[in-house]
Each structure stands twice: as structure tokens, then as C-alpha cells.
Image 1 (cartoon, one colour):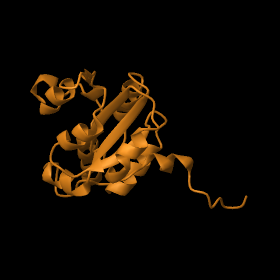
Image 2 (tube, one colour):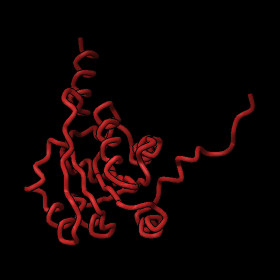
Image 3 (cartoon, helix red, strand yellow):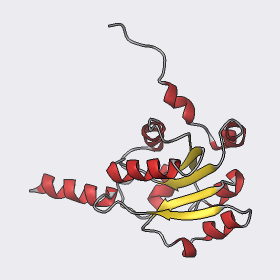
Amino acid sequence: MPANDNPPAFLDKICLRTEVSQRLAALPRPWVFTNGVFDVLHRGHVVYLAQARELGGSLIVALNTDASVRRLGKGDDRPLNNEADRAIVMASQQSVSLVTWFGEDTPQDIIGEIRPDILVKGGDYDMSKLPETSLVRSWGGEALALPFVQGYSTTALIKRIRAQSQA
């Protein structure tokens, strides 16, 4: 079978932050927004993304840049996958409508630029303590925590792999 020189269509979901406003105009509302590292996509992430998408017309995912991941203190070797690779994996998900990046320590600036209708975080977050919650609510949006899928964590997965490789 001959090689296909056409890139996969899902790559069109990835855009630079400077292009987000223009790209949002083509997306159905309500806009659901989430953010994170998503270093090694696992079952917990996939379930979370699907649940988030069901809340609205489009799901926008902002990934931490590699530099911002390093500032989060997740470990000297994190992220395991670089930001371009993480974006490609994220864009391949059927539930995701648009993928971009943010380099700040918090997603507040990009949330203010996008002005999503719904902000979603995992159930391990206390929404009342996040400054992003009051920001989204300031224009009438909602901020929701989705149930955490127990037993699935990138950090725990990495620890388990390291322990097995040392055994």
C-alpha cells in the first residue's frame, strides 16, 4: 500500500495561541475549556475529556508548555513527552475540538482571552480555591469539577514503571 503524504485531519485542531480567537469563531457553543500537562495520556484522561466534551458544543484544551511544566515541580525529567507531541496526542482525541498552549504558571490569561462558557477541572481540584473559577463566573460562565477517575495518574504510572525497571 503506498504511503499517504497527507497529514491526518486531526492535526488541524492544533493552533498557536495567537490563532485561537480566530479559530474559536468556527466552533459551536457552549465552549468547554480545560487545561493541563497531559504528559502521558491514560484512561483517566480519556474519560475526563469525553465527559468534559459532553457538557458543551466544543472542547478547548490548553496544554502547559514544556517550560511551564518544569516550573510545576513534577520532576526534573518532566514532561516526558514534549509539548508538540502532547498536542498531537491530544488532538487525536475525538472529544477534543481545539488544542493550544499556555506558558504562564496559571491558565488565567488564556481563560480570559477565550472566555469559555464552562471551565472544567478534574475532581482532585477544589474549584472554590481556584482564581479561574471567579474569572469564568464574572462573565456568567460555569466552573465544574468532574469526578476523578480513581487509580489513574501520570505521576503514579511513572513511579510504577520506574519501580518495575529497578526490580
